[in-house]
Amino acid sequence: MKKRTVLASSLMAGVLVFAQCVFAASQQSPAAQSQSGTNAAPAHSWTMEQAATSTVRQAWVLGGRNEAGFFQIVKALAELSAHNRGIALPDTKAAGVRAGNWIKKEAKKDPDQLLYCIVDRAVLYTAAHEKNAAAQ
Image 1 (spheres, rainbow, N blue to C red):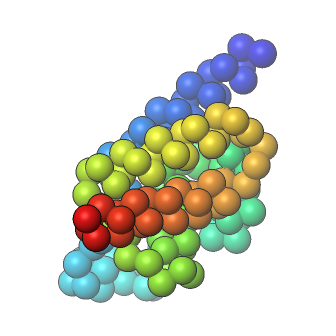
Image 2: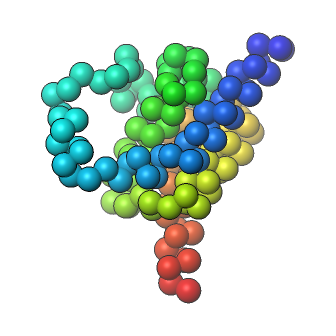
Image 3: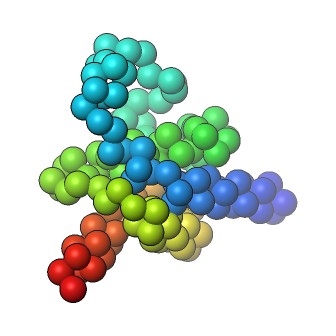
């Protein structure tokens, strides 16, 4: 049981990193994207298929059991979700905090659910909130 508590604590720390960074990081300029190149080797050992089919617990392990690795997976899944839905990720700290809080809440409810489902819902939730705030 102690191991589960440590995992949950570490997972929540990783989600807080996501809350602060994912939306700003995903809005790279085209020049920065071209410098990273599509032929460059990834800085991780997992594939998108592995990430997209991992539960919260499995993603923690896949990310190397550390915040930076887990964040890479969450960031990649958020970008995939936004791309698939044709949504531009909001580039605000408030949007990042909102998404991070959503992910933290949902991951805590059921760590055995697919992380992509949580991230996808967070992207939708955050984009809808930003759209509503802009309309007012």
